[in-house]
Structures are given as C-alpha cells and as structure tokens.
Length: 260
Image (cartoon, rainbow, N blue to C red; front, side):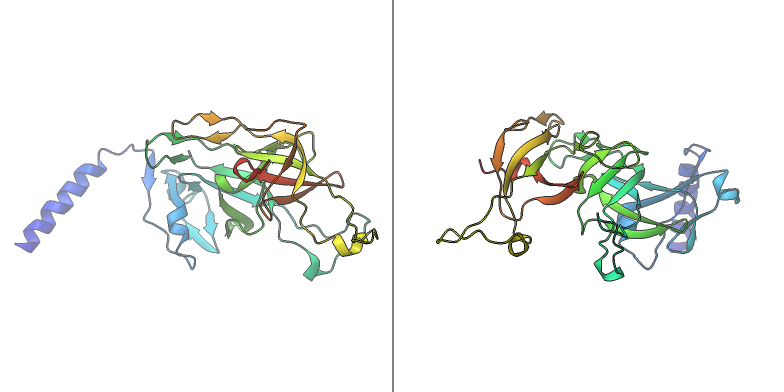
C-alpha cells in the first residue's frame, strides 16, 4: 500500500545520505525572483557554514553557502562604469555604458562536449580579470555586491593586473585581437568625408596583434588560428567587439569570422 511504499522510500533515502561525506551538506535549489538562476548556480556549503558561522546572500535573500558555478559558468565581480571621458570630462548617467569588465570570483569546471563527453576546461581562474560582451550574462547581487554570471564562451579577453593594456591582455581561445584600420573615405569627386560623419561606421579590417590558443575541438585539443600576428585581415560586418586600449581602437573577432 502507499504508506508502506513511503516508509521504504524514506529508509532508502536515509541510507543514501549515510554514503555522503560528512564535510559536505547539500541544500535544495534556491528559487529566487530570477528562477532561471537555478539552472546556472549550485548552492552548497560545508557543515561549518550551515551552522551559522558564515553569511551569504543572493539577491537580498540568505542562502546556505557560497555560490559554486556549474559547467562553463563564471561568476564575475563587475567593475564600476567609466564616469569620465578620455579628456577628463564627466559623463552624464545616460552616457555611461554598462560595465563589461570584472574580476573572476569563481569558475565552474567546464562543460562536457555533447558528443564525446570530453571535459572542456574553463580558460580562466579566480583572481583574473576578464572582458566580456555588452549584453552577455545574468546580473545578480551576491553578498550585496553587483556581479555577473557569464559563460566562458562570453569571454573576449582576460588579463592580470589592475587595468587592461595591450601588453597584458590575452584573447580567449578562438578570438583574435585586431588593430582596426580606418581608411579615409572620399566621394566620387575626391572630397574627403569628415571624421564626424564616419565615426559610427563599422570598419571590418585591420592588423592582427594578438591570437588566442585556438578553437577547441571535440577531443579537447586546440585547432590553431589560420592567421598569425602581423597579418592584415578582413572580417564579417558587425562580427567584432570594439575594444579601446591605450587610446587606440581594436576589435575582438572570432577566427570563424575572418574572411581573408
């Protein structure tokens, strides 16, 4: 009967719990206002953390222990948005762009390839800084700090140190860092078009200055880039992500978007 089945199930569950290491305590999924975060986060804590010696919050609600990203998710502490232009002029609030730089707080072990089952490890470690796409990730507030949960595929560049420079950045995996070449535009009659008119145009060519490890294949190995440092390349329209380093314009482009 049903009560008998319930008693058997509870006994089986109790016996399985005895097999778990005593230092680890698993909590049920934390359903917050952002229910989709339950797919991205795994909340776990040690036995000492569950006794009240540690305090953790997610979007203003207490959780049992620290966040540990699963798969290829990366937890990033976002840096403050830029409040001044290169000339020192303070920008109004509506002109500030959302932060896309941050420090890695925690990183998952990497995702499993869907066909081979090979673990594709995460390219960054806690403590490193990353640059990611403007619209990538999910914003959360963890321990009253603004953070972003992104995938390792969203990372354009990573670096160590307080600020991003051309010398310390490394393109992530299959990304290339291209120094954009902005040619002067002329009309059919030979009149040079003013820079103020062309400032919003997308320039899709330039010189490769840095190359990532390569594109990850199903075996977990890297396929090297088809182009090298110093080569001039053209890439697909709107395929790149604009980056400014040392006052110069660069673009992060995936290897598959290189045309020639």
